[in-house]
Image 1 (tube, rainbow, N blue to C red):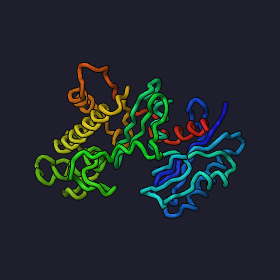
Image 2 (image 1 turned 90 degrees about the vertical axis):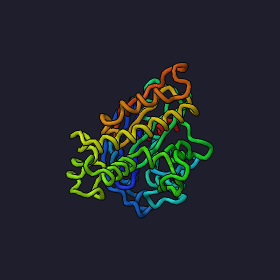
Image 3 (image 1 turned 135 degrees about the vertical axis):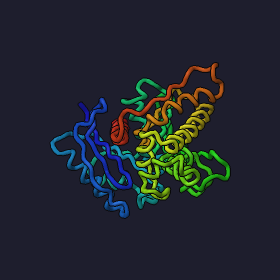
Image 4 (image 1 turned 90 degrees about the horizontal axis):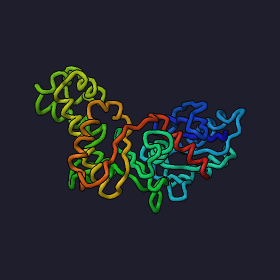
Length: 314
């Protein structure tokens, strides 16, 4: 069976694995990301590829990169959490390992993995939304990964949701991820705890008595214990997610949405509300086939599995 290697490069870790044609990980490993040095990042990728290649015939390598990847799938034009600026990553790594290499945005790689082997199996039109610190996305249309003219499509988190709204890390105001992400969850919880401390009694107790110390873990724990403020924060996120999915439906008409990312681990507090709200507000409701909203199935391995499968298609 043909084997490829997928490497998911994030701001803190490099996750790599040997992947077979059915999307199964044969062997995997982790390394810390030397994020401040492009040269050291390339060397780290080469090291893990060499280690995983020992005793195996590897056809190609796929790299999932957290950043803007150009239309040739070879250059990382910009990455917010690494020192990549117009970085010729494909050539660097290919020269170091002597194998064909393809570079893809990490959220695109995740979407491809879920469409092939995960929650989107069998669906030719899907949108994957990763809800973590911010919001990422990947789009599969007619069974093909949609990348846009310059390779920078599906930056879903930066659709403007609120004109003149909260300042986003991208420099614009009111981006969707400022209202429907892990950071947004914490923002909402802090605001409620500040304005209505009695409503957030358990949340504040967990956070040591002050709203400034509230983080995502505290919100999730408090929600699990029934804290009204924590539950209200999750409800706010659910509403914004549903609205964004409804807007994307009007543009893309997908067969399903796949929701993943770190916030999905707390899906018990928001997932049902997203589906219910979406069904109530989507344009054409009652006169269009239902669009399924599913939770991602592949977890943290989706990026490397997708990158490996895309490398197989070189």
